[in-house]
Image 1 (tube, rainbow, N blue to C red):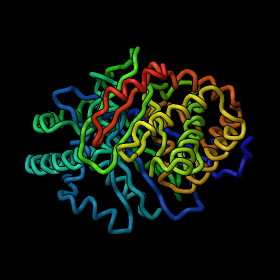
Image 2: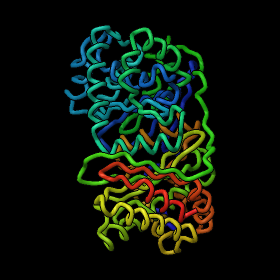
Image 3: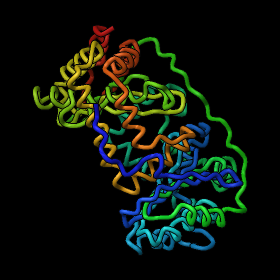
Image 4: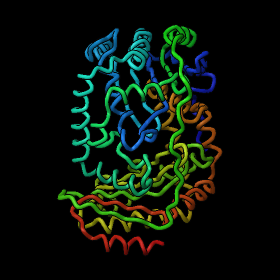
Length: 434
């Protein structure tokens, strides 16, 4: 059992208020800190886009930093936060766009005003659109030059073929050129409504004061529910492999399986499997491939959850001539843990997951992000104390059950980017495991 450390964040620590226009406001009061963090999260990302305008969510995220009527230049936006020692940024993902900032607590109301001003009163200036288009194209070119990014692109295409989830979040050169002012404004009209937005605030703040300010700033903000996204269901019935030749010093390997959705009851059990297999320097894969065999400098596993699907992935950087040895050894470790997780490593995984969560909750930004993302994706909030209680309720049989479901080798996908041409050999290796 994971011993219940005294957690600052429990179900009594946060409050949620739904305003008359449907906007959800969440706060978590942390009187012991001197900061305040705000996440303004909109339920739209790359999977909501058409093929023609792929990347519009990411493009719009950039444009919102370029100026409003009240703050007409980018410097006035970033400077308002950075000038008081704060940090402001945003990220676009597949199912959400997250605008956030962290400031000294006495500037929280200024920061909220700024974030709402950005998304509601953007100038969307034609000149700024053209300048930012060039910046985004440079960003795409930069990431496409990275082999570790290219292997992600390959594996996404194998996991979700023909679906928006397989696309680059930033779009392509062609689709970015398709995006203009009219398309950006149409995207705002469709998705940037209070019904599709969550504002989460954590730190040395007061719930009612935060709600009162947001209510005042958004009293005239109305909008409809957003359109549905294109759903995905897995139909893979045979393993797949792809090799992309690149003249690099290292080969980049990705091994991925379709997994469960964010709503699945076995999500926590799969999380523990992921910790045991490939999180940290004491995980199975790190110990075996790096410490015992010297096959890889970096080796780790990860999970991604979406509303209707997910993926479990192992990634490694390997000397090219040893790519097949590394793949074989990873498969052996996956097969071994699929047969049964050892009780000692199961207990260690629970302790590690709980401990990381406790440490994470010391930071107001992490707390604000935790509550906001759960609300926008799940429409419910599981506080950290409850999350640890749920971890304590799991036993090895739960992990064994989900591992047999997810680590089904008929659903195996392997992608390699590097100076390798042995696709036939990789195919033969896969065949041995099904």
